[in-house]
Length: 609
Image (tube, rainbow, N blue to C red; front, side, top):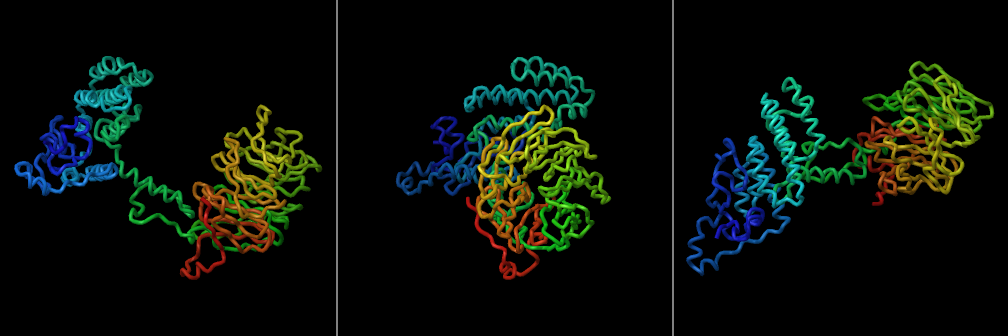
């Protein structure tokens, strides 16, 4: 009996482990490794090493053991491997083969009794890599019976012939390429649109022109490897493993650990060389913006609003003391330094909005303010002071993505679209606006109103529609960068997360104290994975977007925290504005010893999974 169990059918003999005592004997052809992979080929013919003889501990004992019944009984049967164990061995074998350790793979396959892949798949792989297209096409006929989808063979043949066609063109063999196009690709009657595109490549004057137009690497290992990756998707993994399967699984495991890490706040690096596979991924809370780095005390009254610029280099703060202060963020130390003060806002400053390019800043006042100020931040000059009527209340503003227009409004029924000089472009009557946001398409404007809802308004075709309906007043809201999620501060309820596309309430965040004061929350951190909000209990709350319970409660302010802003360019930097007249800048823990850092009074609770 052959050690690969040949009596059980072809597919079984090639794919499953060889779970007999004669596990060392190879069933592969003379020209291939015992793992089923050719070490090298010469015009499609194997010239590699042969591991036909057994190297296992029971090598050469088959004849003698069958001669003596007592000896057969004395041989211990090899433990049958589970499916999971077989899979792991094949994954390890594939990875080692990718490293060029073919003899090690041979020994692993022989000792375990496993086969890395089906022998037909091995021949197919080698013929593709050698550019033996006719032989590869014949291999497809052998693989047909192993495929789950009957249409897969046509798709695979199309991919093979497309590569063959392109390689002929690169070699200047136009007649041969034309024959492939007319005599082999077209009769498949598959993807005719692609065939029309391929026919256009006949007009390419040289190889580089072909590669550019076809977005193709050219004849060689790189393009053939890419072709094999595509072809493999049509084959069951029992026949041929997906390419670099172990690396894929490891990368997925690392990404999952990072995804579950409460405090992970850095860019994901998909390169496995950047992490240790020997330890679980854990981010320390000390790397998270939970610690007071600076306390800005230049305002002399309640600070109602704060907002980092879009490029993260500046912070604007607005106060009841009638001033706006622009702060410069040091790119190295992340310390903030007063850049300039913008004065003259008689009613105080309760809302600020940076233009998309950060050139301009618009300041709005509280309910009884009928004016807004448009400042040039670079020069400190007031470009526009706008007021349509003394009866207006302009308390909120949002920039159009083009940076040439903005919308503004208030609770007295004003809703305007204006240019940079304050000229009225459009107006919407009877909308009592609480908060505004322009979506990225440049057409839709979201507005929360006194009916406890957020509606979408289109100034071009004058249509509107309901998007969010709450049961309590929406005091403020903000929208994620991708325009999909909205974060609402709802009176007496706290912070709610809505999906604007599906129009559903996603999550209610716990812990924050929200009455009828206007409190502004924000998305933040890398990939906007976190949410932060002020609170009437003098704290700043931070949640992971997926969890309802706060992961951090930041203390230090002595009165209501009105607004929180997370730096969009520096994930570890955050600012909060409070009625105590201060702005606190939060960052990672300073370089303290462990006991000191743990002894700081900022508290943390586990995220509710």
